[in-house]
Every structure is written in structure tokens, then in C-alpha cells.
Image (cartoon, rainbow, N blue to C red; front, side, top):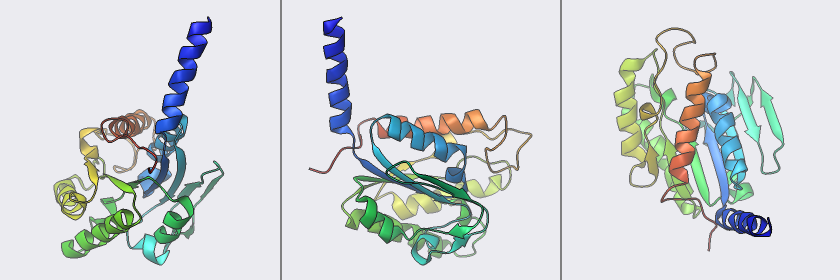
Length: 220
């Protein structure tokens, strides 16, 4: 029994030693079950985590503080949670200063689908990625997931996202971890019975990648 206790203590020490501080920002998918699950997994692994999600957001909203009309989910480093339908998007530079993250996870991209300028989308996402690097944090960018509605836009959005961040961030293609059901839901979000387990698997896949070779670690 004593050996088991010692072994467990050693494992806990290793987890704590490798745990870093994570800032996680995203759009409506992170306001919902994907974001909740990823936040839970990060905290459960010992990472100091601050999660902020604003429905409808693109990177520019995190510069201007543009209010979301469709929902937000915030959970700070202390685990204090705020939810609501309408409210300002947090300013990203302020979050970087407050959280001082080792790693920033960004789940953005879907809301560029209806914008006429591909150049704007690339520059907008690239600017956020540059801010992350300037802050001395590693960047992990999560793309939009699969969807039934607007499915034809997915290749374009993925290409724009890759072009914007691939030389600055580790890129996670969420369409490889998701398959939107043929019926049910709104065609975009995973907030319904059949969608919930898919959102959970998506979050687990992101977490597993983060826990691999590019494991989150504290700054030296």
C-alpha cells in the first residue's frame, strides 16, 4: 500500500510540474459543450486555465470588444463562471496581460464564412496569432468543425485559417474529429442530443493533441 501511495504521489508531482497556464478563447462552439468540456479537461489535468468565449466572434471582436448578441461563456483562473446572452467580447491584449499564459488555444474561423474579403480574414487571424507569439506564449489554433449548414464553405475556411496561422501556431483540423449528424440541431452547433457526444469527442481530441509532443509546459 505504501508503494502505491508513493507511486501516486510521484505521478501527481510529474503532472503538476508539467502543468502550465492556458488561455482559451473561442466563438459559439466554445460557448457551448465543446468549450465546457475542453475547459474541464484542462483544469482536470492541472493546468491553470482561463476560458473566454463569445458567440459570433472573429479575431477583430477581441480587439474592439464588440458585444456578442448570442451568448458568452467566461471562466477565469479561479474557476468563477459567467454566462449570458449579450455582453462585450473581452479585449485580447488585456487577457494576455491578466492571465500571462504559457499556451493560448484559439477556436475561431467559422464566422469568416460570409465575409467577402478572404484577405481580411487571413490578416485578422494572423494578427491575433502574432499577438500570442509577441506575448511569449505558444499558440494552438483549433479550426471550425464539420457542419451540415454551409458545408460547402468548409474547404475555403480551412484554407484561410491554415494560411493565416500555420507558420505561427500548431493547427488542429476539427473536421477530422467531427461529423455533423444528417438530421437534428441547427446544422452548425452541437447543442443537441446527438451532437453532445460529438462535441465531447472533439474536445477530447484537442486535449489529446495538446498532451502529446507539444505538451503545455510552464515558461522556464
